[in-house]
Image 1 (cartoon, rainbow, N blue to C red):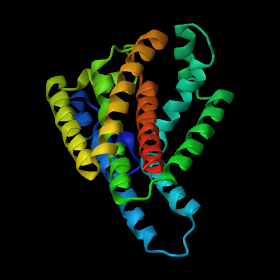
Image 2 (cartoon, one colour; image 1 turned 90 degrees about the horizontal axis):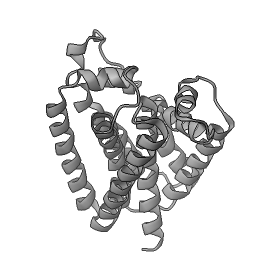
Image 3 (cartoon, rainbow, N blue to C red; image 1 turned 90 degrees about the vertical axis):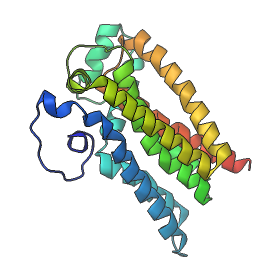
Image 4 (spheres, rainbow, N blue to C red; image 1 turned 45 degrees about the vertical axis):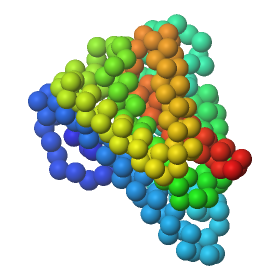
Length: 247
């Protein structure tokens, strides 16, 4: 159910019932594991192709998560950007996020997002740095799921509310925390400085996200979780890219 909802990977059909949703969020980060593994695989493969341009190498890394996820998280990022830049009241912002139309600020900020991602990825030139970045796809989904279960809900409806209300909260939270610890260990083992900096930066992002979501929307929605997931991935790339530049 997690793969069917949050990825384009082919999976068997599952009945959309509450009893089937109890542990779905436990498996959400595994989509990030697949994306990260593919990015690492492409990194090593592209290193052996002498005539490959830097734009192609980086471009494929940017495309992999979009193809696997179907763009569901970046869609949330765009919706939140439209809502935030409307300067409307809370009710109107929630309506804007639900509106299927794309606004100018969503387009502007998604272009900025991928330009920053392109710049950051072009500076990552070590296996350790790429491993930390690739682990960020797991980290983004773990933190997104934790926010969905822990932050107040903005509304008592929608797909996210269906997942969280049906979840076996204690089991899912414990599983996500264990996955977070494993992800942190992988990042620190790959490169202790890069991994540590990424973890600190994203802890700060979680605190910022909590106050932003509660203040602007009254809590979390599916779109805010997609926004958070996308920002974690961008911040991970920027931190690794910046520290790679300064050595």
